[in-house]
Length: 214
Image (tube, rainbow, N blue to C red; front, top):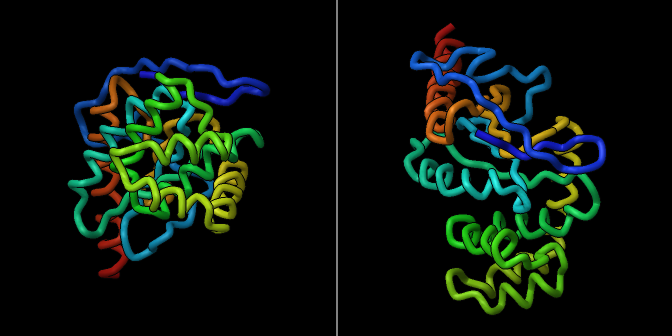
């Protein structure tokens, strides 16, 4: 199991190889508790937040797993995705991610974007290149995505992603946080990580239920 990490100057890959636990999620083994919780976008529900990067091959591999899983979320759970910005050059891809979020095209556009970046080596961080590439796509509503990209809100959202990356010291991708405070430790494989996400969703739900009856 690998994820992309940020060292002082360059991005490296860090391999994580631990034994998967067959029990319920265990702190320090399957997850850690954030010292500084991240506010949810919707406090009335349970948020599954992923920090990712289109440049990250591990995110490319995990994305279909997470998106497929998110389609099965109960009504009280939702998926939120934020693109990391470790350096100014990443703002372009963060803007693409912001446009994808705003247009609601995550499920349709992400596979094509990851393919363009990793297999076709297209620089989608460049505005002209992205818009030219997007206009030629048939697997999603390209006009809707480009309109979202051109909206002032997309750049503002990208800068907010940069702020989130810095404020919460996001050092690797993919990084999944459940309920604003539980960070998933990816052990043996992505499927095991998905299992941990489910267990943490239940944990957050139970904690909130316990507080509600007090």
